[in-house]
Length: 624
Image 1 (cartoon, rainbow, N blue to C red):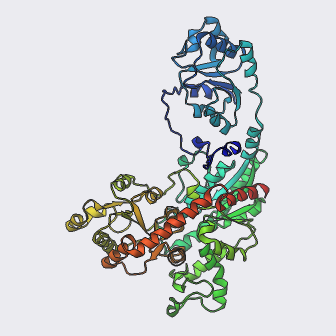
Image 2 (image 1 turned 90 degrees about the horizontal axis):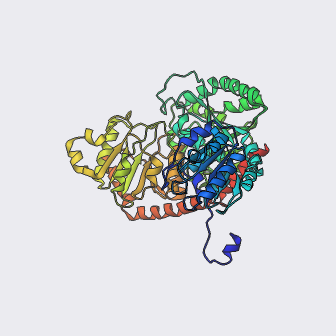
Image 3 (image 1 turned 90 degrees about the vertical axis):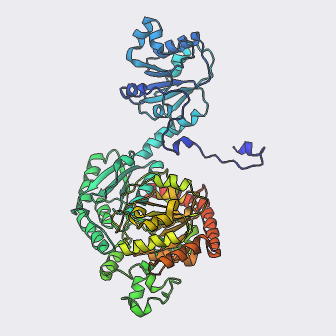
């Protein structure tokens, strides 16, 4: 590449192997014969030589016969692709003399065309005789030994000799296998905004060679079928099905830290006893609110790392709590809610994450426990320096462990569905019919609740704004279901085809859609980082916790949103939508959002701040 670049004056982008970055799919012009996979299942590991010379190269009948006898005499199991247009074609074994079939028996399998990526990934395949086109990348990505062969006549003795390279394993493969022995235990907090980034982190670290085990509660447990490369370990939590809201959020989290500790400790002790000689548990990575995991790690003498699923600016408010208590600002007084918080401007006291909790003492105690680093060796952040560089630097002065800001993590993994709520994809076809940047997308998260009156006011505000809208209304949120059909006939007449409502949307896909020009959000950190990553400006309607901190940061520091603090009334809803979507103010905000998107894209490229931080994290784990 370096030599080539000397003769070109345009940039090169080596991004392969691209087939490892996308979900499996079939796009072959020739029909794949999958019977060979069941044959491979019966073979021993790394024993099979796979022979395929592409879709164009041609062997005459004599060459096919020589190849066939060479494979037979090598005494190695073989899977051989012989196209129907290649001399003998069809089932080569049955078309050759009876003595050949006797020599091979069940040791050979011939097909017209094979599902190659699946074949190369199979445990039984130990070598690939190839024409060496772009499929070389597929083999090298799996670290297979390659027999390079131009399509020329070869004596059968040479074919037999070449097949003997199979027992030799490449150093790269050995290195990869050695790293695969490194296991990470991930302990997510069982709420949508916490499970999602933990599973994204697992996907990223698995791509770096780690074995991933997700230790999860029975409550809100993830779907293992969506992560076939992970191991899942269910922790009994002692809790029945819960209807979680901001009112009982604190007590539920506190209960998890009491009930889950012993079950996790016992389960991991068993894993260490059973697999200790085969695999090393490099680290337990736990959500900051599942802090019992640190005690388990200490008991088993395993390093631990914290994953913070909230913003760095939110962590700054937690760090300030002892100072605010000492200076008499906490408990908060009604008269000071609009005052700026000393040393945390532009935050006001009403923006602090504990300002509207009824059990503020319980919350402060939970925060205190959750944000002790204890003996953890590092903190991982789902953020980027371009979003919170100042805040990360300030936090670093109060901690004595490394930070790894590797976000936005959702941009580093293939699209996947890990939602606890079922996504309704019909909205995408509706979006396809809308003009660019015309749609206001409204979704207030998986916990926040609107009463029926607020839903009606929001509905009429959206209708009167004259903007196309996509609105997520959960089935447990007052009216629920298809709001448009449950509203008065006059509402449906006003909206027509301009509105679409769903119970839950594929949010990352929605925000990346060209038609979406604004996001009315509760400003949970996942929604926040997903929106800014796509350059979508926001209306920030926070409810509780870190949402209020994020809303203030988005509107006052980053300048990519409008903070909404009014009562939900249809006239006010209409005005703020038009401010963002139509007025000059919205154009300025949209421009800033696009600039921020570009900075985020740079951060996750090779050499960018988040990409470099991820490499540092991997080294930290391996050296711990």
